[in-house]
Length: 250
Ligand SMILES: [Zn+2]
Image 1: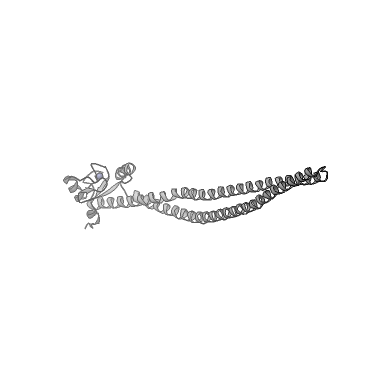
Image 2: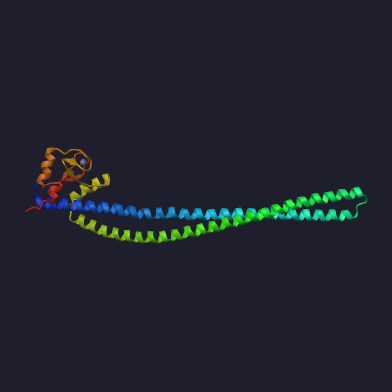
């Protein structure tokens, strides 16, 4: 762009398009962020479902353990019953009173021990009941997590579709803005945008709002004259005066 070849109004239009381009680029960045966040958020929610699944598996394994423990007690009980029957049979063949009394005492002791195992079995039934409740609760939690995820996924997909449609509209507006801009101006804008995430900034109270350094009196008068592209000497962003942009040129 050769200085002096553009009118104030032409230059004002360029700045106007630059600001519009900046605004649409900001929106595009936001929309892109939202679109990219969706899979991440969904994966986070999916982890809740996985945790609930693991919780259920753990509860089932515990219950299985309780049940096999019961089996062990039951086998023990059967053994003890067999031993008592055997001792009862021996009673018939006792040869002396002393032998008989000893056997009776032994049988009483065995019956005592058997009673203890029966108590353990009853206690184990309680433990199993609690285990079954644990599994049931874990199943309910999983169901809830899955339902929550389903509802969330539905909403997220809907939002994703909306954001993608917004992005299409923003891309169109961006293309329009760029078509209205001089190639040289675009080059300066794109360079600053790429490096700093923003290509054009206002100057307020003689301060560049991109890097917050003061502008020189010369740059201020160039901005006020509104006939050429002014870039920040520190951050290289294109600068404009909001008051010049807003003033309607007669
Ligand atoms: Zn600056």
